[in-house]
Image (tube, rainbow, N blue to C red):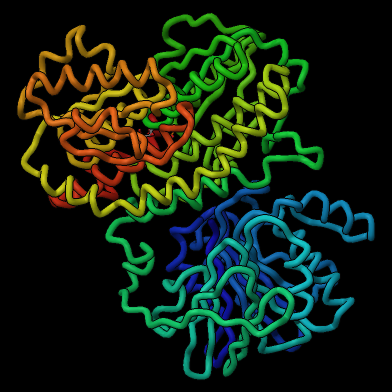
Length: 614
Ligand code: M6R
């Protein structure tokens, strides 16, 4: 989830680009860079770290004045956050500069083919593949827009590309497939960018490009075609937001925006997970299959929301691999003399990759000889660097302190990892893995269906502003979903909210329930009769004590209706995957209730986004 911008017009390009990047820094801050055309030569400046580093570089070594250029602020996916991996990337002949947002799925195959033709790469990114390919296409075709269209036809995955050609001054070309791109239409100047925040200080007239479209801007023209060169239509609109609302995509909070980004974040996390033979792959693997087959115990280590993702992982991993799997709070692990050795595999889950409790736990595990696989959202952070293998979630930067898209993408990565281990150990057949993989591919659409019902959940939340105690119940993987729902409410609304395993209720917690207690109940899909019926009994138990029940159940589950004061319909999905859809209404509920209470949703009191002390 990078931020990209292109400009063509009379203003000084570098300052327009830097201003645009400053308004998109929330999209990524691993590195930043700009390229401008000056007298038929491309001049580039790029620096790892925040935009401030690039500004300092440009103050020390200013680029000459120019009126056309591109810029990028990076959220690293392929290749660590270094100067070399920063965008813009150049073609080997120096003619093309290109910035990219998204994931090029077939980068390895294209890179190999280009290397065979003598193209030399300077970075580890999938993005440089697009720059080099565009350079080769331009040399063959002579026209930048034609070359970009050919390049797009060859690329697979999700991408927005913006490029300039040293020999074609004044023109900026851009393309999109499944990644955002808007055109800003100015007076004698035009812009392209990942979002309107980048150019809102210059113009409020925008055009939203459609899928698989290419746009060419000059100071006084905007031409849109499809990937085959046929003229195409795109949606013009007027931006009414102020700059701060624009950064939040029109939402009141980053957190709410991040909740609504989940379909895209999940889809990105699923991208590029198969090699040419159709086998599931991880991002960085420094453990051999033999070692993975020798593993006799798996321990999942994490904190907070990531720990709840780990609880779900335990169910999936044990079910698919038949290896005993424990899940433990990272902060407890190393202080109890745990049994860990060379046949133990630790899986660590961390959005930030910097949580000190988690880091200390994996260091301890490695000292005992265990191997560690990290699930992490932050490329180049400490935890993946100190692990033996990594699977990155591609959620993009999570700015709201309360984790939302971080959690659902962690769940997806846990499923992928469970399937990967089952593949390596041969505990599932290929068609069984394929069936789950196909179901995972449906999740973005299913999460979108839940989001489409947000207004009903908001109304429910606004009706509960006077309540101070909440209970959340679930069984099986519904239990961690209930715990995560309760945590969201605690973090955001500062209210007492407890999650319990539904079966545990009658062993004590039921004593706190009375007519004032709303009880959220996550009901397993009706296909799991035994599990489902047990939860329906629990529903009846709490209702008999006068509690109001808010039931999250599969749409069409008529069995729960008589026991529900409010019913939240979930799309049909298999039991193990249900937390991905079940958590979304609970996130929306907590966000809306906290907003109604006047709390700061993005920066709740007493909390930090990344906990870097033990
Ligand atoms: O960055 P991490 O995933 O390692 O962070 C772990 C927890 O600190 C984090 O999930 C925390 O619980 C969030 N505030 C939850 O919303």
